[in-house]
Image 1 (spheres, chains in turn green, cyan):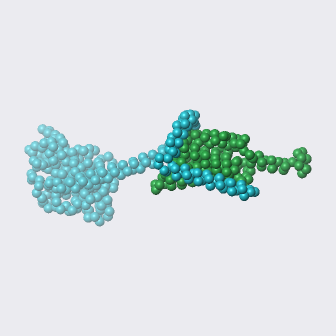
Image 2: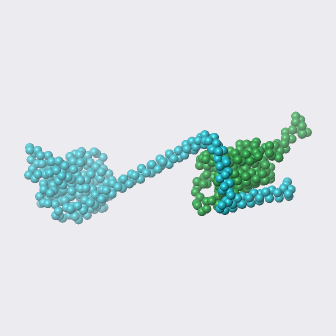
Length: 185
Length: 292
């Protein structure tokens, strides 16, 4: 339920506000970041499911070819989730490169898929690439706070919060050799 | 780290989502499917939310729009400045070319006029310098001795007589205009044939004076003045007969004076000459202008 509302809010804000907000020729794109955030904290299968649902909503409300966004976003969610599962990352700034990677994957893969499905044989101008680069940069800038927001929203639904688990794992290091606080040598 | 069951379930989930996406894509492209109706229905449902979100985010959008417009305005400003500079340059080039074309057309047209001396072997030259004084006395052209130009050869511009060559070097020549104070050109008014000497009104390049015109031959305003090509046994005019010089603009009839003073406006615009032709060969006598 929480994830569903998060996705709906993200897609509506994306379509009605952020999508029209042009910054240096590009725009903020919340969708891959929200999917990446859910996958980063919840894992690959929830990530893929979130990606599919986000893509479905996006295609539904934006009157695009149904399934195109779902295909790309479920792959992004799965990829980010697998990264988290395999590497078990703990660095606080990791959402920045993860968000950037999700944004790159989104603009490239969705661009390619929609080009194949809808655009056809038209030539691609340099402006498209400029817009892609600017969008990735803007998404990278907002990745850290947005991942934090996603974590706050989905935290009650998480079986295991990876950051919390890492913190618990690190806590003995802060204690003394006997494992008791205040007994440091 | 993960057991086989988990791995299998994870892969199956991914395959299921990808397959569902492919099915959706396929359904989107099949005509008459239910997806279009679902899309329209969903858009109707979410439209009020979108409208609200759109209004709520308008200030943010306006702020970013203003920032973006400011950046764009800077770029646009530079681009437009470059464009204006380019267009100014192009305009200047075109205006110059048009003026050159007009003058060259005038030169060609002048040589085709009735009565203009033939076989003069004209050499076209571009004006490369003007006398820095305000008296419109001389110009320098880019053709010289190597092009067959010699001193005392007549020079014409678009419209009519311009002057004569006074100094020649290898690649350039000095032309003294008929507005120079030392200039004197024997001329006659057509059609009545009254003869006189054209002298400049110094400082007035638009007003020449045909002096020494006898009162017996009444000159009227609007008459054309051409070179007379005066020649006697001892003296010979350097200007061949029949080159148009100007049009009579005013006639002063003074009872005390022995001669009429005829003012004429030169055909050639001596203030704005860019091209001239030097008549390098003296023609033989030619009919076309009534004899006095």
